[in-house]
Image (cartoon, rainbow, N blue to C red; front, side, top):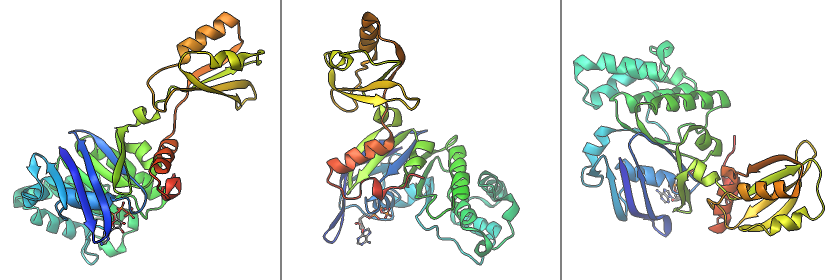
Length: 321
Ligand code: ATP
């Protein structure tokens, strides 16, 4: 549904995007994750036709965005970073105006608006002026206008920014519901948002894509954790000799038992060390309490990428709430 190839964008001397390429397939919910200034909004504005790239191709729903801007904009639902709401209008009047701008036939408008209102949970607030709504409800109005024409593709720029924790939970569950019928690309600088909502994450740092993968792929590691009820002599050395092991660290499990973190060759490697470690433990009669493959958190992955790219932001540039 979205195909971006080698996108570059500069603002004077600032290189906001450098050779960005990615795809979003129908039915996916994809998070564009990055710290402040990473280039998320620039990417989204280019995708939605509100900004021209310097170089590169952007195709949405099979249409080249710079050439067919209006047709693309008709087919997508877009929530900009600050939704252009009219505070003096009631929710109902605003959505009616948006339905007309979207050229929804008069006879269908009531049904479409009701569906958007219901999906966004705005039933109780129809006649209230937008100015009287809380920030969370204003955000819902922004989302309702983005879905009133029933787009198959929704592009949301930081949909939960500035909301309190309860509002964040509500807007996230709204996005989850919408993802049942629409393809969704949203930007965020909140790690847990990606973990809560996404199939796939694209990590953007300093205008470059540093990772594009399913969360389970990012979390995958060949590292293993072995916990024993007591530590046998020489176990560490024996573990180090297992094929594919790079390093062995001692650890203590949360319930106080001795154990080892056995690091494999290369981060993200698909090799599972557990079968070999299991055989070794059985041969040596070690009292095994736990043996599992270790996983990396998105936080760890992000920090590795930020450090690798020389970004000063690191995890400090992202929120983990
Ligand atoms: P944030 O999370 O803070 O919104 P972002 O990831 O959305 O950041 P962008 O807003 O795309 O990042 O900005 C990328 C870079 O381009 C930043 O260095 C920003 O200062 C710069 N930039 C963005 N818009 C403009 C502009 N209109 N003029 C000059 N520089 C700009």
